[in-house]
Image 1: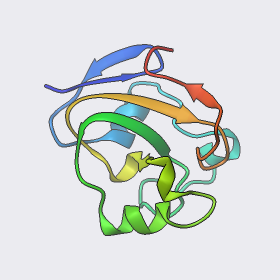
Image 2 (image 1 turned 45 degrees about the horizontal axis):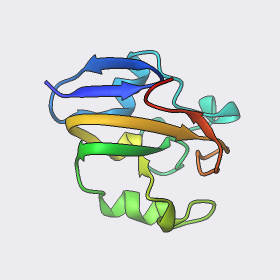
Image 3 (image 1 turned 120 degrees about the vertical axis):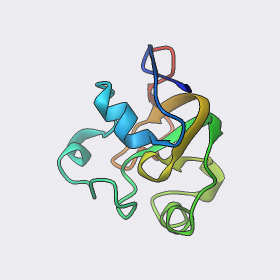
Length: 112
């Protein structure tokens, strides 16, 4: 079973599990500020669950690429939408600041 490491916690999930669901089920605060109340609930349209993911995950879908190609996101940041990402192997997740997680300051890393 793949292991997900985020905010100093490591937990297992089924291969192919949705990263957003896995993080939320394990108490990881995926959303910054008001995004916790105002997000698309996993439809891939708002972009507030953007995270940096290192490890074996699914390829980005057309929906995810389209959303991450729109401001305030930038394709050069190499972020993923947790709601559109399937965990295929061990991964490490980092969250950045900003309403959409698009900022330059780290909110949490895999270690803490």
